[in-house]
Length: 309
Image (cartoon, rainbow, N blue to C red; front, side, top):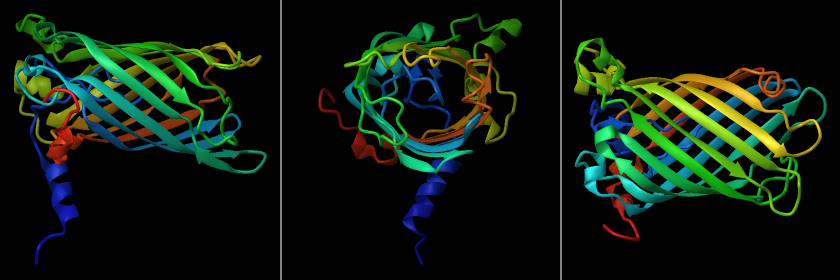
């Protein structure tokens, strides 16, 4: 009797020990998909499951996010150390389902707004593991009015970056800094048709690649799955520059976590800690989980692009 197709697929996805990818790869460094920040690397991926649980001063909130990113224009193989699969231009579409359970009042559920993010990697220097991208964040107010705090279209620029430290000397203790990397974003999304929601945000991720340590610095004998791990910490800032009275205070958060990534999938889990008083009311406790599939390796036909080959 043949094994179910889904079981074979799951074994293939999670049991792979491969540590060489073209997804989010610049030079020799492969960057994770951040759990809060946007990724500077255009690629084909399906954020199939992003549950988030938050306890606030008013009660608690549970959400399930999902998103799809598709490469529209492929990048030269030289951008990813000769490996195919990278992107030059991509489009991301994402949203989430939200359940709000306040301490007082009735439970509310519904979908959040639809967000679009076209982005182009305008600068890539593989030998320095550096990539800069420019995006345009477009928020369409399609969400349920019961859970939305605003109902205006937003559109604004977003700058994204990714930088590995593989250009440091590969000697002495200094070589153990080479698996470090930074990635992040900064953006501003004003609202059309009102003064209710003009948002400024910035995120920066510090990560350490154990696959890079094993493959490019020194193999210290890490077994699977430790060999595929990326410990990381994000610093997240968000603020309404112009908004309702009493809601324009900045929120500064720390998001530590750990990710597992192989050729087909990324699994990531993190918690979030408020670093200033403005963030405390909306974040007494938070847990975030991410399941991200690299769809062009699971289903090769999805690697098709409308422009280029």
